[in-house]
Image (cartoon, rainbow, N blue to C red):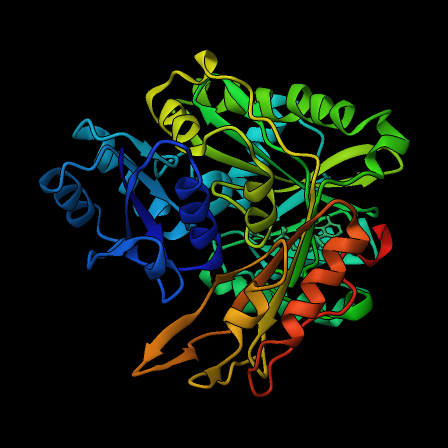
Length: 421
Ligand code: AMP
Ligand code: GLY
């Protein structure tokens, strides 16, 4: 198969690596990619945000399948444009991508589908925001309605800070004031062809910048999979997966279809397990980052076949995705200053040395070549991914590997998966 992967992060690097590990040999192209992706795919110069450019490129180059990594091209309608020309695309169209692009749209779909989520008020003015904050009480949760590059959500005990957050986003649209939910968070991915839904395996992301879940929210500083502790509450990890599939993923996909916007691609359920049961915090319309980096290395079913079947509406005919018993841990190395700002252009060293550790590989998030040097070009620079037969082993490998990597001012969390090890 000839596959074009759109995106330039560690998630896309993980997708490319997983496609590469299929027993069938694929020709893989990536746009724009990064230095790490360039080792495993041919980088091509196509503007991934331009539906026409992507479609023309795919047609001219006989691409069999386009896999859309990030949300921005989805919201731009790249998947719609491809499907209009009969090119298989893994990723929802513009309308279904509103499940991620608009928190208000997502709430409406959830309400219609009867899916458990926090109570929320959609506020358009400061007065409505104040009324909702006082109705729900502290801790306050305020979310920008549209895409906000991971900065749209505030959870705080400080009513003034909650109001200030709303004041930032109200001029650009509306906000959602939500009831505070408490409990462990789980990310669960589903492949969907618009009708059939197939779960992958649960993962946990560490969203705060600092150890002990302190500091500001980030794109995610690390993750691990599977989540053995789910068995305490749900009998088994599979029991949890089955419950979320039946009560959340299937009803949402059915509702989107009824709404005239079938969901073809990756449905990411961001869940919180409260005392009262599982609740949806958010949906994303794409693979999660960094969860993908630890979910896909555990996948034993060939990925290209699954993505193609989702794109073609034939997921029902495919085997259910299965996963190896090995556990996986990933630790993100970020630039100095991340997430507030990021010092870029610094040299990265020691990757070969890090990858020589058994069970370890590195996925690149923001890297480029500068002559002979490899340099950091963004906030989250790379992830170390380690597999092991136990979490203690995987953690030991991941942290031994990150210690071998040089990046001046580089920062990482030291407590990823510590509680399960
Ligand atoms: P989101 O962008 O919606 O995933 O929100 C970012 C983070 O804010 C989540 O991962 C949660 O940790 C937190 N969060 C969002 N909504 C709530 C809520 N209703 N109650 C508690 N925490 C929340
Ligand atoms: N890991 C969070 C996200 O991908 O949105």
